[in-house]
Every structure is written in C-alpha cells, then in structure tokens.
Amino acid sequence: MRHLFAAVLLGIVSTLALPATAQQTGYLISAQPMPDTPPGTQAWRVQYWTTNGNGQRFAVTGIVAAPMEAIPARPRRVIAWTHGAWGVMEKCAPSLSPSFFEYSAGMDAVRSGYVVVAPDYIGLGSPTMHPFLVGPDTANAVLDAVRAAREIPGAAAGGDFAVWGESQGGHAALWTAISARSYAPDLTLVGTAAAAPPTDLGANLREGSDKNARALLLSFALHSWSTLYGFSLDPIANRTNQGVINRLAQNNCVEFHKKPKLRTILGILTVARATKGKDIEKIEPFGSFERANSVDPARVPGPLLIAQSSKDTIVAPAVTRKFAKAVCRRGTPTRWIDMTGDHGASAKDSAQETIGWITARFDGNPPPNDCRRI
Image (cartoon, rainbow, N blue to C red; front, side, top):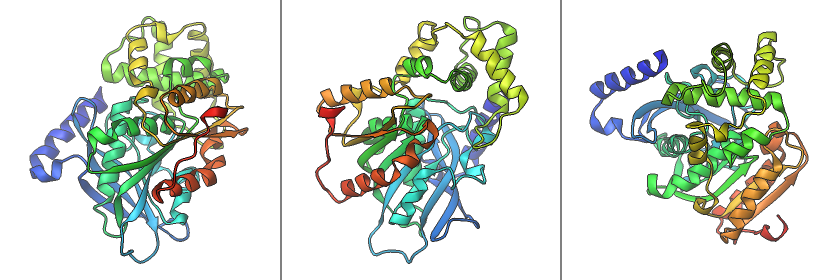
C-alpha cells in the first residue's frame, strides 16, 4: 500500500507541476543517453506517461535503442520488445539491470536497422505495484512507449511498428495487438510475434510442468492482484503462508544464471505445498480476473507469429497450440515456429526467423500461414 500511495502522490504532484500537454499519454518526460551499449547501438533510458485500464495516469520507464548511424531520410521501422517476467516490484525493472542487453533478445533487431522500444511496464522502475499479466494496463504502457520514442530525435522512430515478446511479454504482445487500433489509432501495427506466450492464464498457471517455477509465478500474480485490487488470499492459503507468498514476490526479481538463495528456495517449496491441488481458476475473484486477462483468440488481429518449444516446462505447449488453433479457426494468418529448447531461450532461439518475418511484414509481403500443420 505504501508504494500505491507514493504513486498516487507522484501523480498528483506531477499533474500540478506540468502543463496539460505534458501530461498526455505517450508524452516523453525524459530521455537519458546510456553510456554502455552494444557495438553499433545507441540507447536512451526513458520516462513517459501512460495510463492503466481505469484511466489512472502513471510516469513509467523503459529503454529505446537505435542504430548508431546518421539519421535516415525516412523514419526508422520500430519493434516494441515486450519482456518476460522479471518480477513485480519497482526494483525488478529490466531497464535497471546491467544484464538488460544480454537478456533482451529483441535488441538483436537493432543490428537490422530497427528502433527497438522496450517498456518496463507499469510498476517496474516506477513506484507502484506492477499489474502482473494484466492485459489492458500492459498494452497501454507498450503503445505509449512507441509514441514516446518518436519524440527522441536521434532515434528517428516512425509510427509503423511490430510488437514482439517472450513469455509474459508474449502475453503483452498479444494484448498490445488487441488494443492497438482503439488505444493508439495514430500508430500502425504491421505484425505481432509471441514466443511462449501465456494465453489461457488459468491453464498456464495450472499446467506448467515445473512446479517450482509455477509457484514463483503464482506468488507474483497473487501478490500483485491482492495488493492492487484487494483480493483476499484467505481461500488460497493460511495467514502464515500468505506471508510467504507476499515476501517471495516482494524480495525476488528473476536473476538469470544465478542460483536462488536458500530462503527463496524454501519459500517456493512452501508455496508449492500450500497451493498443491488448488485450481486458482475456480476460486473467486481470482478465476474471473484470470479469464478477463486471458487472451481471446477472436480479438487478436493478424498477421501473427507464435514460437513455442515442445519441451517448455513453464508455458505448457498444449495450451499454446490450442490457442493457435483457435486463432486459425478465425482465419488469421499464423506463422508457427516449433522449437525444442527451454522456456527462457524461446525468443533467442526464434530470433532470426522472427526478425525476418517482421521485416517481410514491413515490406508488405503476403504473410505465411502454417494453420494446416499446427
């Protein structure tokens, strides 16, 4: 609640201090050049305005990267890179991590001439709770990041963009596609790519075969939703285990290639035991909230690319395939990439094909359709 109060106070103070035009969604508040970037890349840490699904305004953060070249005669093509789960607390923002470029596969597209816009989303890098897997809130932050990037002269970003995300970011990418036309009619979405995307949240939180990863992600979701919306955890765990759930989410960001601390391991095991056999989808109001923030295949516009590993232990392959089949039944052209690596490498393993597919969408080529073999 302390973080939520701080965010509201920040919004009030900022509203008083800034003229109306500087408070609009997508308005760039600041862009600070980053000193240490990959060869051939220039980048800025940015802050900009966005809103959640209820219209509440937030100052949020992210990174915009572009080729280290002279500004071209025409605006550059844009990819919105939507990151996977890094945590739910302010400190977990990807833009704050020294490993950002190493573990953000979407940044590979800068070498192909793209501006890559990488929002942190609401609550990561800004003082409020992150709305974990909340579709409209995340989509707004992505679309406003694309708008804000256009105000950086050195980026030379255009208004045509593709969105590409991994894991939680796959969910974000699909929701961005759903929201783009209504929320940001000034932008043009040319294609959507999602690697290992959670789509049916109830099934995803239930069917992932890695029970420990499932327990951590469930803790992120329960802590986020109970904090933001007041959902009681009483039907899910006793008071002692509720404390474990909250501390697990509060104290842990995803750290790549680092062994978890002992207390994190014990917390995960406790949550796994406490929630064993409980289907959150059948416990209200969590079930209704999961369904509202799942991805409706009937609402996702094409063209679409989905990359999924058959050995993914976090996002169940069967759930993703079921979603893709439902999209195909709507007649949406869908490119399907089969992989065999682990979940965390989903975007990296499909990066070359995905960037090529996105380039073909910008070039206006007919989209391939793999629906018959999904």
